[in-house]
Image (cartoon, rainbow, N blue to C red; front, top):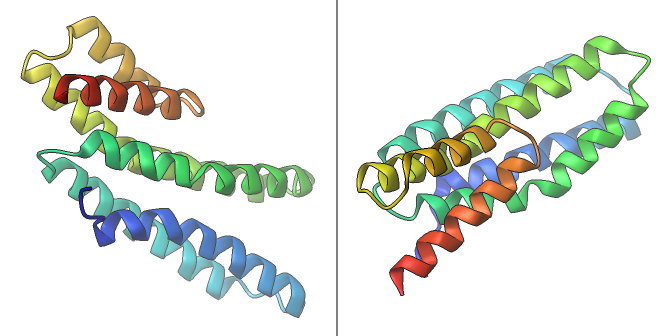
Length: 158
């Protein structure tokens, strides 16, 4: 089994710390936006670190992308529920959507890197590489695309 990099672990766990932070603030009934803004800044940094890490990766990007995407499925479900609860506050819903879109792109960097490397090596047809790359920009399809790419790479390695 390949080693798990701290960058991937950070990206997989940081979003959940935000949910925990919101819940703690809700329980304390002391809403201050300083910790929330600090968490958002941390998420942007974590996403940036992972995009850079993904672009430097030479192998195992499909597995890393798939694992981090699967890890974040409950987070997206939680933020969907929070979004429904905050529907009366459109700015909060927009912020949640933008943060989730950033997270989607950061996790997709691994799969996109793998698609590019496989396409460049001639292991993926151009049309199939295009479909997999586009799937990384659409919620839900990004998970399906990363699983398909991982299965394709796993079959080729055997």
